[in-house]
Length: 152
Image (tube, rainbow, N blue to C red; front, side):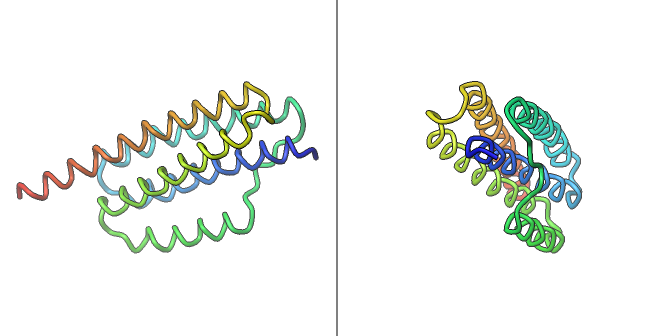
């Protein structure tokens, strides 16, 4: 497997990780509005995952397996989020995760812009835009929750 394919698969693993985290967040949420945010964005994660797999398979083999550390992080979140009974805190954890994903994606696109195919980098930029929009949705949800709590 070439370095280019390994690098593209690394980015794919970031997107798969985000998708799996959103499933955990959605499963443990109770507020319909928050569940809808997760469901809508989970579909976008799957769309991006499919497109990335197709792009990688144009030049080699796509690897959809997560590495050991990624699996450990998922296990950690399963335990952490199950202990969160508050939708606010679940949304807060999702916001932190999406912010981390966005910064990792920015770094990835910047580092590999000259090495990877232009269409792959363009897709990375679209995914960054998706992260930003999702972050905005989560921020809006959290601010509304804070405002509602203040007026009670």
